[in-house]
Length: 132
Image (cartoon, rainbow, N blue to C red; front, side, top):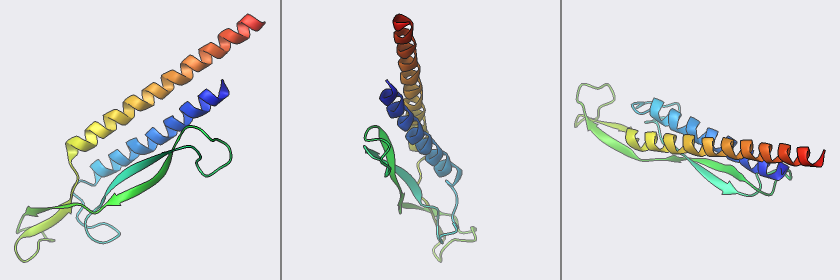
């Protein structure tokens, strides 16, 4: 029973990272000057099943890595301080609708994992009541 809770907990952690990444992408949708230099690069979460680097769990899902996607869009705005000689500004290639859909999907997966934990706890309680 505790393995099922551990698996659901790993899903909760992974989906929380995914939601935070979506929020970070949305917050930086218009950032043209990042600390790395150049426009902000969209982040994507890559999941991995199995181990998270520790020997604690062979099951569940874990964040393998967060990758930066060097995708940009050119926006014509000659008055912008970062405009090139042709009047175009290199902007992050972040689609607001895609990020919102990803955030909703992560939220629903988070809720499903919470439900799985609650059901597992109820089953464990019922088992203990029957044995007592």
